[in-house]
Amino acid sequence: MDAVKSFKVKEIVPGRAFGPALVTRERVSFHGFIDPARGIFTSPATELRGSSFAGRVMVFTSGKGAAAGPRVLDTACRNGHAPAAIVNLELEAFIVQACVMQDIPLVQVVDPAIFDHIRTGDTVTVDSARGEVTLDTYIP
Image (cartoon, rainbow, N blue to C red; front, side):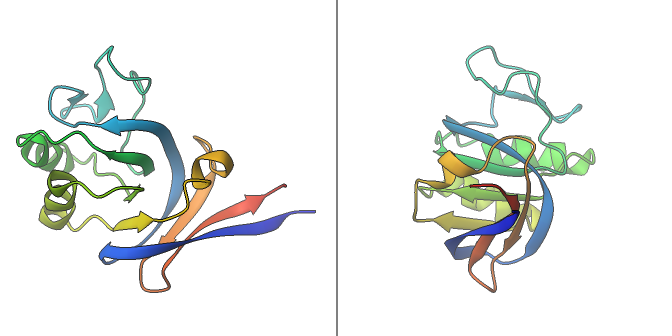
């Protein structure tokens, strides 16, 4: 039987978003790792290589701390490739800055088990006001 699986989160940049997840346990950098003109990861240093982040709910551990990252993500967003939302386990200042610049919902999840339940392609909803990320169809 299908159920809903939710994870409590802390609102960092407010908003509500719905879409397919893009999940990695890696720390993510936008500077040097993405092609902002195409909205995809291009670096061979990440398991996300070849993956589009446009319109996706990105679920990853944390950012990598590249000062140019917010500018690169800003360029991707201006090219129509904004992620729907970002969910992080640990906050990193440049990811926060990038989300504030482009009004991308950003939440911090406290339960690392989120990585055991949400997989790339799953449909999820981020609702910062309710303080939750919901895996819309969950089969335990």
